[in-house]
Image 1 (cartoon, rainbow, N blue to C red):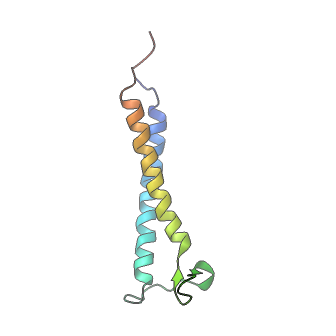
Image 2 (image 1 turned 90 degrees about the horizontal axis):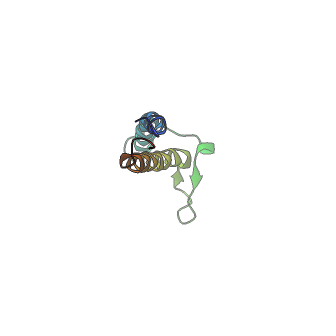
Length: 90
């Protein structure tokens, strides 16, 4: 009955950690905008845009947000794969 459960638990735990990091990154991006201005990110943390050179993109925070969704997809994929497997070998 424990076939691949450990993998699912591990992915679920990692997804919970990444969920908090995703929310924190989203809040920092939001509060960094000109409308809020609560957070000022250093120049070394951001990159410029090729079309709009004055625009600063917080790439590291965007990567955190993207990796959360990739991990969430892997968690669901793992759970769907093991849901229809037989419980053991005969």
